[in-house]
Amino acid sequence: MSCKNIPLNTSCTRRDKLLASPLKINVLCVTQVGSCWHDYLRLMRLNRPVGSLLLLWPTLAALWMAAEGLPPISLIAIFTLGTFLMRSAGCVINDYADREVDGLVRRTRDRPLATGAIQPRAALILFAVLSLSAGILVLLLNRETQLLAVAGFAVAALYPFMKRWTYLPQTVLGAAFSWGILMAWTATERGLNSDAWLMFIASLLWIVAYDTIYAMVDREDDLKAGIKSTAILFGNLDRFMIGVLQLSALATLFLLGQKLDYRHAYYIGLLGCAGLFIYQQYLIRTRAPDACLAAFANNIQVGLLLFCGTVAELTIASYLA
Image 1 (cartoon, rainbow, N blue to C red):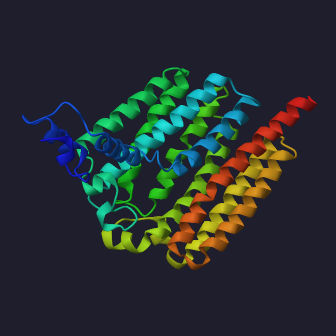
Image 2: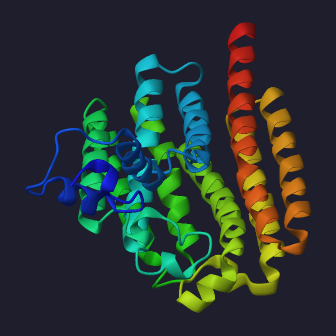
Image 3: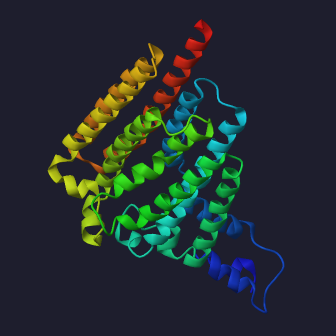
């Protein structure tokens, strides 16, 4: 069998078996190899980096806060690469857990595991490789941070299964996504002080808010598939509860700024975040799926403003010192 005789919609695993048959040829079709790799890129969401950026900006902001200025370049590199690795690993294990139900949800029915383009065993191997790679990075950090990383990995691995047991899986996701904030404080030898926990709480509140917006997109399909979420729990109070969570996140970030003795740029960043939250409330006013997706993605700008405000605050303080 030649490569060109294999349909492009054949799964990566099936395609490999066909090419490994006694009729195997030694030349692979570039188009099909590219299609196979594209399935893995989609599984890791590398074609859609929204989630990675949502995780990256507050983690870097926390790193700057903990270091009270520019952190060591090595820490910036470790936390940035670790963010992308763990986000990808989280997507893989999430899709593995949801492989039987993703086909019931319009937004997720074309995911590689749901369609059979990638087999579950291959996904688990990829998850292990990504996790091991992140683990190697963690070995470059101090002992306290390494122990925190193990606990954070357990939380991240548990999250995909929570949507079957509780209507609050977004809370577990918030903890998993915010874990790097705690690690930022320990990695800079500051320890888990009250500043770290305030930032962690603010991040968790914000994440529950934006992931509830995300869950609003799939609410009707999730109800049919038996998937639980805060969007289902809140019901018609969804917009109100999202607003409460957003205000609570801003208030916690304000308290953190007061505690850290920040003065100007940081609060300008928070004002920008507040403006974006108001814009998100406007977008989700009709609960239209496309508008909810746009509001969810808008949180990238929220994280960027938080990061830029923090960096500007510390840079100005350093210049005036």
